[in-house]
Length: 293
Image (cartoon, rainbow, N blue to C red):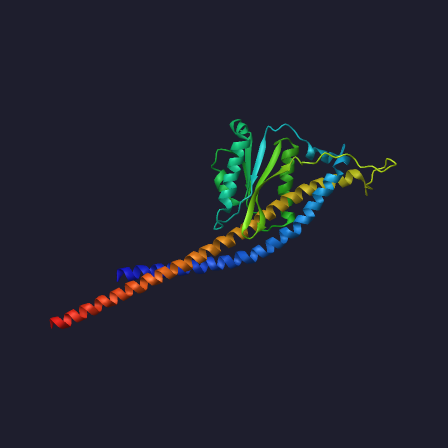
């Protein structure tokens, strides 16, 4: 009977877990739909904004914003891994952490030895890991996912811009999951600063006049466009990671629910066999007792 009780307890436990994973799967599916729409609508705008900036790059000249395109000698690097605040999303967080460590060791090993490689974490899971790791730790942002919109990203993006302009770091690289589909997330390394612009020549018309008409003026447009492009790139990367997180969690909870369903079938079969064996033993004892009398 003790065996029956143990199996029955396990059945109740697995059934309770299955209900939780099933509910989490539905919640993640709902959030995925919203975050997927957000990133898919965002990408064309961010791409066009970056393209516009690249087309206007030759006109930067003495623009104050040209400082974001300078390519200094790389002596100090900041890595920014983007993880989630919660778990139960498969290998979503561990893959980012491992890739960040691998990137640091393979490409910036000399900077690690000189203590010139630092990490700034976006997301609690990465923060928990790198706080205790031997890389230089500069801080974290874990509240950005609570109210994810462009206004809340601006201070974070300005922080990275300030670090670069003030020569705190010569290169800032994001490591994040790029959303492809609910079941596919690709780890991407993207350099935020300095801005990588293709070499271009100023396109001019036959009369020597630039083909672009700047309104209100060239300086004001460039000084507004470049910072906005940088902020938009930060927003896009975090949106990508956010959608990937919900996709990974939905798949993980779907698999967990399927596994729980299979386990329930096996446990119920074991329970019925044990119950049948117990009933058979009782009948044998009754028959044996009757024969003895």
